[in-house]
Image (cartoon, rainbow, N blue to C red; front, side, top):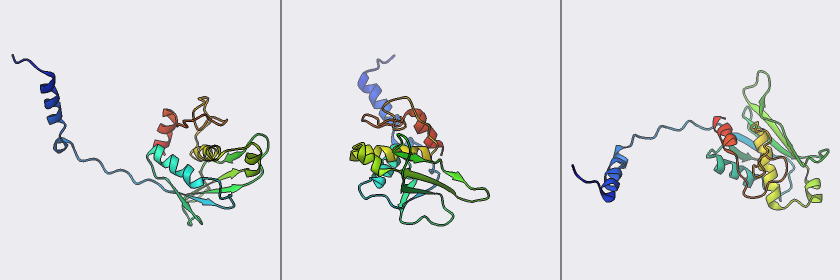
Amino acid sequence: MRKSTAAGLVAALTLSLLPAALPAPAEAAPQKVIYVQKLDMPSDWPVKSALRWLDVYTGKSTFRLVKRCPAKRDCVTVQTGKLSGRNVGWASPIRAKTGATHRTSIVVIDPAKAKRLRYSQADRKWLLVHEFGHVHALPHQRKRISVMHPDLPRPPMVLTPAERRHLARR
């Protein structure tokens, strides 16, 4: 019986994992695009950056920022408004109207309240990411570092494994 060495095992393992031996990757299912339209958002609100963070973090390109939502397509409208209580942002989950072929949602941000509370650029980005999480029907989380925590998280912002699984199914 031959004695196995670490180098021999590594060489055998390397040969068994050559790309030619691997099956071709399955075609990825096309992602459903959700169009995002900004109505009256101030320019210092990083909507595009928040959408890009979600797309990169989830591995999906689901959001596309547009000047006007195309007809009969899934669309989220981001706009400013005055919110009550402690709320600086609010979002409705994306839903289909009865008999419709597309779904709509709305995200409302209160920039005046954010300014009074001294929201930084990073805080505004977090708020937008959080509200877009609600668009995808993600609930609030108790974990302080989750972007879905109801209060401002402390960096690094993350999506919990359960939140990532939820988004992967959408």
